[in-house]
Image (cartoon, rainbow, N blue to C red; front, side, top):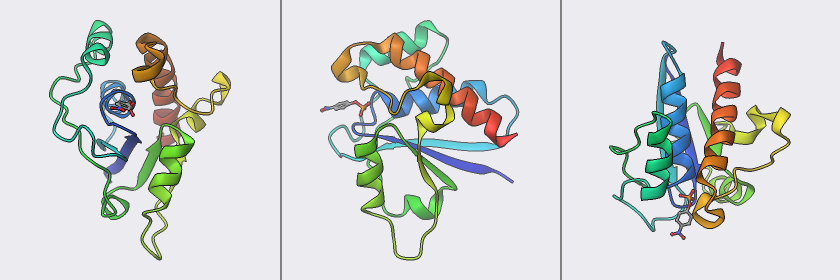
Amino acid sequence: MTKRILFVCLGNICRSPSAEGVTRALAGSRDLMLDSAGTSGWHIGEPPYGEMRRAAGARGYDLDTLRARQFARSDFESFDLILAMDDQNLADIEALRPPGNDTPVRLFTDYAPETGADHVPDPYYTRDFDGALDLVETCARGLLASLD
Ligand code: 4NP
């Protein structure tokens, strides 16, 4: 059965679209429905951030067709697993959880314990787009391994 996974960050233009694109590229034949969203509505309708697209593109991940949208309460029903990029994202997601809903919400970095990372640092601020992609790739591999 199709597993539906949503990646969430703040703006939906750097970390979560990268997580979506990288996971899709590494997923192989797994039956997944992947999407991403931002807890803010600041960039609705925009493609991923230019430098993020370029850094991802250099590794063969095409993020160009993705468009930002805002996380919605209905996403708790539409997805089987919601993955936040940091603790603030996680808290903002949990604040919208409908009563009685038990969809798991976890940190993406939970799937890469060997890195010691407890969040995906935001390259919009750090400017370390390659460092973010390195971590996103490790998390994506761990996530995919957890599904097998
Ligand atoms: P993201 O990064 O949450 O990884 O998409 C950000 C992008 C834009 C802004 C903040 C974070 N912003 O303030 O516009």
